[in-house]
Length: 149
Image (cartoon, rainbow, N blue to C red; front, side, top):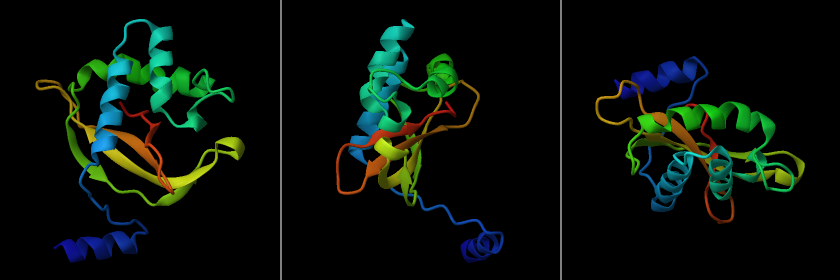
């Protein structure tokens, strides 16, 4: 059955999802990020998430989230973070491909995995993906996308 599904996905131009075990440093990162999102004061919340997000989500000076990130992903995540478990429960991890993220001074090569975090018991909804970027050549992972929280 798995072979047939893989063939159907390949024929449709889609790739099979490779599930991998979560990495401890990524779980720690996601926990710290989600804790920062729970802060009640918005300015404090923005400052608190900055160390955990990829540089391409920040302004050139690194002191703020970009306007688009702040208005959309950050606002949505701030409003819905209370729906997810704390500490986080990672239900699965989808391994990503090697790619380049960012542009010009924020450009960086690495791999972007999706860490799915579970909702609290009794809350309706599927686990939400938080994209964690692992830079090539080492370095700390960073949150790259959290718009589905």
